[in-house]
Image 1 (tube, rainbow, N blue to C red):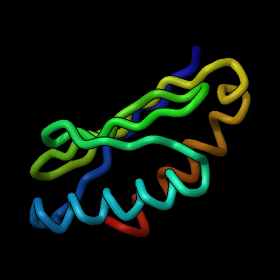
Image 2 (image 1 turned 120 degrees about the vertical axis):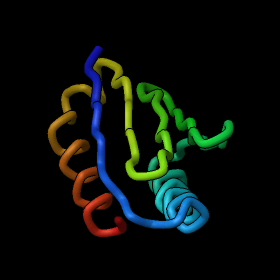
Image 3 (image 1 turned 90 degrees about the horizontal axis):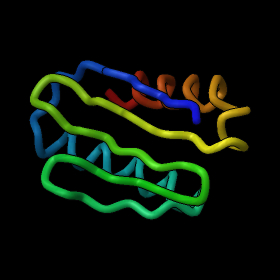
Image 4 (image 1 turned 30 degrees about the vertical axis):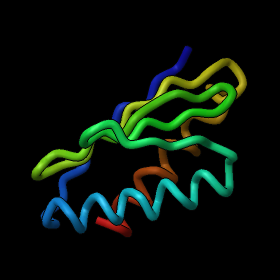
Length: 90
C-alpha cells in the first residue's frame, strides 16, 4: 500500500479555509466518485482503493491518503495534482 502525506501552509481564516477545502472536496467527489464527510476539523474521504483525510489546522493543511494497489501505480501524478490544487487555492 502506498501513501501520500502532504503538509501545506495557509494563511486563511479557519472558516474560509474550511469552505475552500469543501469546494475542492466537492469537485473531487464529483470527478472521482468519492464520499466526503467532516468530523470536527478533519475531512475524511474514500472510494474504492483510496482512503484518507484532510486535517485543517490554524496555519496549515495535512493531506494523508492510503492508496490501494491500482491507485498506487498513479501515486506521482495524484500527488502532483494535489500539490498543484493546494498551491492554487491556498
